[in-house]
Image (tube, rainbow, N blue to C red; front, side):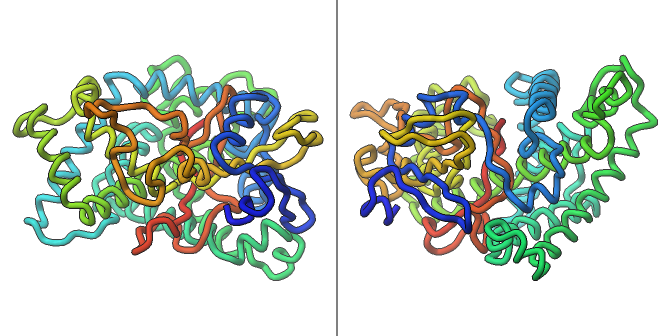
Length: 408
């Protein structure tokens, strides 16, 4: 963002030998994401994920493998209730379990990591067809490993490995994260194999893993759903589907503690609309404009996803410049969420950014916490945007660079 003040909204940086075009500010990013469409649909290769996934999975595959994995995943998640009433009930059930955990502290301080248990369990319910007890050793081990992997992905050594893979390989900078990933994959293979004897082709699909097993039982000439790619898909879902929601909830708790007036107003609105003891449902959102504004402002203020790397699939013109096919492009989402031309007080936590003069919720075009565009984006769960201490609340929220969010 500092470089853009000197070189303008479109400029080139050199990441090792790779020239990368950076786009800053709402107008430049909007042109890139809403304009070319399919021309920025590809992703540049990231060295560490090429080693981990070897072209498999959802977020780092390409061509036919990516299309097959993405279409399969979207279809299965929809059949499991994502975006429908069935998913709401699962979320509220998990919320009840989390509330009971919080009540157990009787008003005393609790570890913020606890707020990550519920969203992680919702993802695990979709993946494996059952929730885990918060004390389950598999659950505890998996969350601990995810946390360690995220921190390692944000380490300076991994960033050096991604920019200079040959040097990183020589110095073995990738070995710590690969070892942790192998432990995660071992747990996932165990869970996958435990379900395999119970799944028959044509049976009702109760989980993402069940769907993968059934798909692998049919004609699969390219082995798109053989065990290695099945594990890669599950790994992508686990890693990308847990950390971002957990980090957002932790930041929300921190910001409510820092802004007691905002916390009080949210509680007042919830009490007024929901009454005592009733959990919120999607249909209540229209009646909760201030609460909705606060949730949106949390995501804007913490800039959870600094950028989603893209890659041109054809010669593309952006900002008056011609970008050859295969050029990596970084639309800097942080610069959009903090753009002084779009937000009244970009550096401050201000729910008023999403409210009109009458207190009604207002959608903002510059609200792009997870990218945008006609082509569904494929951010992963790491890459060169990460920094040490990934996903952890710190005293200065704007110094955080957590992992990308769970989207396709």
